[in-house]
Length: 433
Image 1 (cartoon, rainbow, N blue to C red):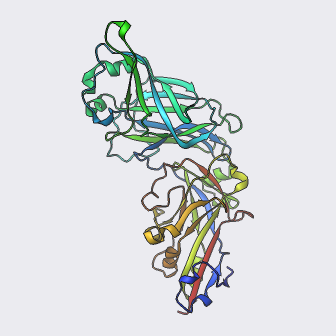
Image 2 (cartoon, helix red, strand yellow):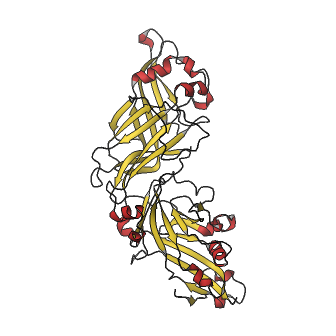
């Protein structure tokens, strides 16, 4: 590793007087990076969920199903649709979050909706590979279509079978409160299917849904009362949000359906396939293993006081293109001896969390991580070095566990990439032992 004294390096100014002149800067340490597979991630019962199927020319095919309860808004009770209510029509409306579209905005997918026969629980931690549920055999919706736009807002609207909606509103005994409703109607599964998807001209679409939006829900349009000539159509919305709501995604990912050969090799365990590029994707499909193999050499024959330690990850601008937005942030986590993810110490202090960073630099096209405290701990041998994980997540210590709220993907430079090679930058002061 090449080192040099540098009095201008950011961070030297925090060293004790007299030490800055002895500060050493290194940015040539060898890194190891390769993509590793993840089978699933936890799907949190939160505001934004996904639905869709999309095929990417580098990452292959991803699809997300949406499981949700539908409930009476505001915990109302004794809901009645009046005398002789009759369904005119019914639909599921899903309001798409801002910047919540990945893929072809004109794509037509097939959406099927099935009633759940299995309870969804607020106390269970669900994961994206959850399969332990059953549904009715026949769908209550089988719709092929595209998203719609109204007043600048994007929606996915799925017509629902009139018989299902009629049964829902006809018997008020099921609508006394949410507990009774949920006991009878467990919830819904919305599935998305594509026909002959390909990344060139039929890539499909992936949507981030705002489940808390007041225009998201199961809508019934009905008439009641007699005589018929006086009837007018009324609207009622069953919500997908509230105290009794449960929302989760299940995700299916197939890198062999159109995925890059080097990505497939890395996911199969070939770490050497990542020397030119490594790959990162949201929804818990994969993460990047990162190691600094010769790190302890800095403190081999001396003690070291770390001024700044920074990992810089470069986005491959040639392969990523511009059509898919970059994720706003990544997180660099450490690992224990069993390969479990842990926060680095720089994430645990509010005073240094901003310096830790992790947010996309739109000017330099990089993600940078200041892990000075963690590297100091490793070089002082206060903890062992088991490497790092680079994941698509918010760097906040409270949110880094979540992988289900990003669906973007990234192609990053590998250690032998001539243009986008990642770097480990270290500024330190050596002391004799």
